Length: 339
Image (cartoon, rainbow, N blue to C red; front, side, top):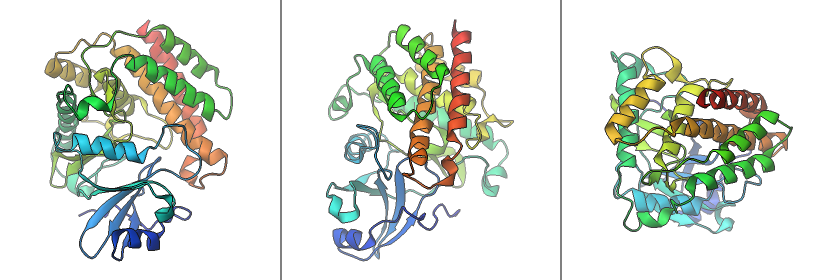
């Protein structure tokens, strides 16, 4: 098994004594190092392993990084969607480790980011297998019946796209460290061209390859879908547009994608297959691709804002402002292509 944890980064330590008291037994803590936002840890007790999720250090955007809401989402989704990890305990007492956190089950598998580990790379045609698993999981997720409780209470589909544009524009304003006229143009374009939405579905809002955990010896099967904090109800094309953003358009320094290499599904191939398998009207997809690129730019700017203001010392973030500018140019190009 590939080791997916590392020693906890300096400045991001967990209060082990408080966590031990909370669980009533001694704990050992390591960190999952891949994420850029919420902090995720492996908690090992004499009885079992847990995954602990907490918000990043320093001030965060209003309503962002809501661990109690993510716990509620997973509580509702896991019973009807096997890739969603089960959750165990929520703690909203900041005296335990300094922030709200929750504990969920530990899943084991492979996460692909910039390169495939040797055991996956040795499988003939693994790129096509993973591409299919990626799409199949998303189609299955968007097919869940959301008309009944508790799923029906996870969001308000009416006005979803307008709220997305308004909310992410507000996040951009709050996180700006310099003027970027291209982003202002994107916000105006998105606000002026709000599309009609089809039937609502669950929307993960961060569906990307490195949030999928694949079966260790079968990359054509999904073991888990991770990072549920932004999940809601809304237009599934928003999910698909963001998924295409990460698959195709996130070609920025520090975020190189394995999916741009030979053998992986193309953007057009994914679109054709998604349309065929869902039967959805795809005419608004170009809009949602622009929205997806915009959202990724804002996410990276929020991370850079924390680095810029000294709230994190993680050196991975020091050039994210350049990535934001490049994504803004990509969004502008997609706007021109959309007409």
